[in-house]
Image (cartoon, rainbow, N blue to C red; front, side, top):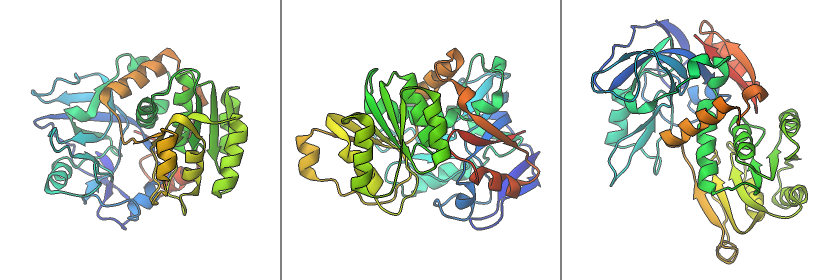
Length: 358
């Protein structure tokens, strides 16, 4: 089969002929249909997103057809269309450890251990390939997905599911006013779609890319946009003006930022008894004022990945049209030229996505 392989961080992503992955104990072989290529994939390949076990077939998430199932796997059945989450848990409740397969990302405190190294070493085939083998726990059956008219749009399901995990952890209810920071990015765009589907009275989408913000505003009359200028006071004032007050929920889906100012502008926008959920890739220390957190009774939560139940609920919402994927603009890329595909992926954002079709 053909696959995008990475010999080591900093080396070029290349397309190679590799052996078809055999089914193995605990595993599922998928014939991949569509996999989103994140905008930051080139940064990851160059070593800007943390470590990964190499050499490896790269790729996280995606939609595929189940071809083979090990005898000890009961999560999916041959012939089903399934979502590959790439999310593997150790299963040890007292000391949980989690990794992303075919990608960077370690749960908990984000540090490697003998267990996380072993998990990544044992399961080494990502989804930028014609076929992959994944642990059964990282594959979710999607009943009815074989009839979905455009499988390339289902490649966005992993992002929607992760965003849904954050929205669920926020405790958001219908009628709430919601702020999404980093809304002009792909995860932020997903969070906007989820907040609308959950019945937000108002979603204030905050970002820097005007084109992406304009597309979000055109989705629904409940969406208002704020273009960030990068300073805490100015951004907080603009968010407050768009809200006409304060927010019950703030979702931070920002990528790496030079300062914590926009995150803190979001903190300044949370109402008393409100909730802020951190979902994104900010790598800054946050100057959270103790007295404000206490007196305003703010709940501050982190959110990384999501449960299989959350991902399944997202699929049912997509299937029912509650989440309308017609808003997505999909650029398809082929497996023959990974360098060109990464260039296309990094040039689009928001509700525009690059999808590898196989």
